[in-house]
Image 1 (cartoon, one colour):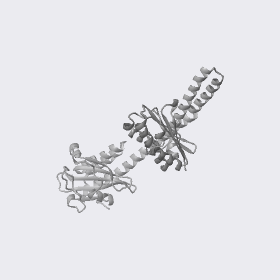
Image 2 (spheres, helix red, strand yellow):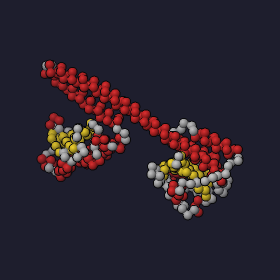
Image 3 (tube, rainbow, N blue to C red):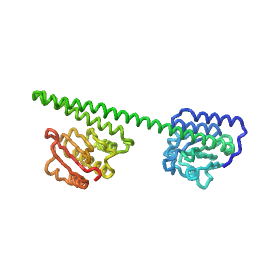
Image 4 (cartoon, rainbow, N blue to C red):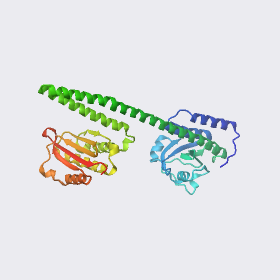
Length: 376
């Protein structure tokens, strides 16, 4: 839509200053607030807001305000998600200028405690055809409504803001890539140097143990076992370093579930991982794994009288292996045939696996091992 030029030198200088400030090296949250503040100052708006669209561009994911006191914001409650006039700008990303927004047919009104607002100016923030959000200004100070000059200024600012937002997001993606590359380098160093050296040390110790007297050989064997456990933990760390988006994978889901069950067990349960659990375990198998963890730890809490327990989830070749071990009083024959354990056994067999229940280390407590085939 064409706009007439702005002849006021002061307004042009202010616009230029605002655009230049947007090019500063600002983090995205700081940049978004700065855009609202500059827009309010430039056209004399009492209130301003910036709504950031969600990925689907159907609603507001964030809502940043300027001019409303924090106490008033808290009393209003939840932030807008894109109804009424705000929703109109989402579905029709075009500048919108109103003398009284409450008289517009799409107006949804204000929640209790919200400041009264009349004049309104809204423009989309976009770059290269992608709309990132909308800029909302209300209540022009000393005027009944925003002017055509105001709209032209804010549209120009929004265009510069769109480019600045795009640059800020691009910069963040570059930083994320750099972090991932650094994590990948660390993972390679751990695998190629640290694990190989530990493995070589273990082989050397095993050779010495075979020629040593029994007591010394036993001590060396324990040291080799400790090395094996250290290698396993490093491998788990490598998989965690090299798996993108691990905060939403099987690993994170198991950790969240175990944390959720801590009030039930009465103590913290350590969790260990081995192998590419996030990439190798499909969604269906993951659901069975989580069910098994919940059932096993619930049994520990109800029946074992345990003081500690542990969970280990591993991918070994084409098998996923879940092991829950406690130091409680063990499983009697009656409980071994309980409905909950029968259910776990059926789940494992459905996935080409098995459920094994046996005494824990040193014949104390219980060791529950649930196996299933990966890619069944």
